Image (cartoon, rainbow, N blue to C red; front, side, top):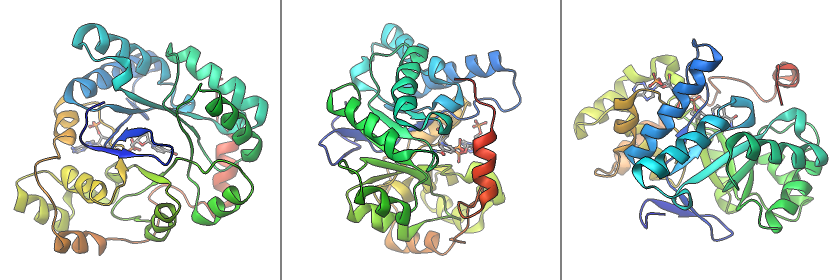
Length: 297
Ligand SMILES: NC(=O)c1ccc[n+]([C@@H]2O[C@H](COP(=O)([O-])OP(=O)(O)OC[C@H]3O[C@@H](n4cnc5c(N)ncnc54)[C@H](OP(=O)(O)O)[C@@H]3O)[C@@H](O)[C@H]2O)c1
């Protein structure tokens, strides 16, 4: 792993400070096309310099990620050991037995020997049972780190009060409109690294045309996407931008040559609306929807 642009998890494992997302590689394409698109996008991401790849059983991109990693090894000479691969356990498998089975299935689909990080995808079902299973896999060396996703600070407090291993990572929605500052402070206080999903709010709320972001981007002669990534990286939050466009994949990785000032950071902070662009975890309908989503194991 490159010596720069990394963060250290509380177990000493080094994780890149910028990652690459693989959800909905091609929203409108058929399954086969989405699969090829995801593989090519991950390959381009590895070529561009990303060394953290985010997938999930639910995304159906584990196979594509595995193929891209093998191609990168063959064609670009990037060893698997330099790539940090994350996958996630879907809600219907979030039980003790389901986690053991789900982890094996993720490995099988990806064709990889191990994951660097495996997450409980959502705070649903038997998260304590699933955590016991993931903890066993972690302690036996089959996963290098374990974590959760979409856990609020209250949920996390309950969780760590009754489990032995504090999650290494919590992957949550963080973007300029939903900044989650209290949750991030809590995670920082407990040495839980925060990863930001939907760092660009998937373009919602006309994010890429936001006046403040455009103004700051203009000042550094960079893009709005790069400003957002710097805003996260400078606070120790790992952005997981997704793109299937080669130029945007490259642009989104090119964030190391400028630094936002305290004034810039404060202006971005003012954009917080304290509201998800996607779902409200206080709403029972969200849980119902996730529980019922079609999922082919
Ligand atoms: N744990 C969870 O529950 C959870 C939930 C959602 C997502 N995630 C993870 O987080 C990753 C990122 O989130 P996301 O995919 O939902 O959304 P996102 O990264 O905020 O936004 C992706 C969208 O932005 C566009 N885009 C990317 N770079 C751009 C640029 N420089 N200029 C203009 N448009 C740009 C992409 O289009 P193009 O592809 O055409 O460039 C795509 O439509 C996911 O892929 C997934 O790995 C996790």
